[in-house]
Length: 268
Image (cartoon, rainbow, N blue to C red; front, top):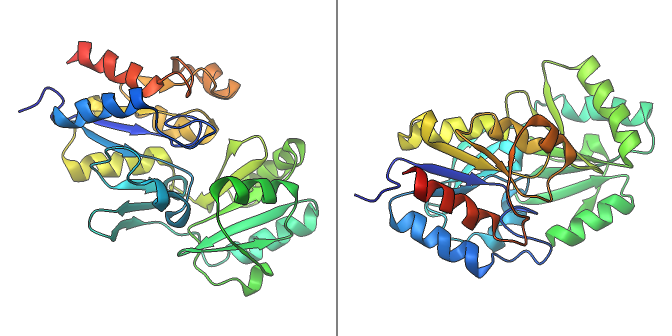
């Protein structure tokens, strides 16, 4: 029995497990190999969808189902099956259409299975799809196949703040609306958060809450940091994460995952 038996470590992907090169560093990989060899369970908890994360599933020694679409989907890549699915409600197209009418500068990117659809693509859209290396189809919201796992609303930050406030005012019981970076506002079904899905995963694995550890860099990671025994963040994290009170380590380019495992090595 390894020293990390019964311990779960969940890491955000972009700008946490990996930097701008989208590669897991040698230091992080070696530390993770040690962690899982000693019985630990490691997973990624990302805003990326199945399609945009699948190319990276072997980049690290993941040995638990992966949290995708900002907590809307729990997927077991080993078994090739969905474990938990929390899609957006069927009224999402109508609601987001109303939002876009109120704020015309918004672009909307939606995910249905492995297909990506975009309404009103803008400069932020282009940068996002280039980073996640995906193709997409431009289409009206009402014509997009559904259900959607999530929608990503894209615009300048000040515009997105208006959109977030409007959605939370009009439909507080329908949606989680949270930033994954300054120009991407993530919309998932109510209760579909990284934190909620981390707890579901821990329950499935038989791991007690006091042995859950999470790390992330942005506002959409705060729900999982809130369920972590020690909430970790890389030095490059958003100010909102620092203000929330995360334990800040080295940056995503400074092997912050290896630093966490070093802390856990002393803790266990």
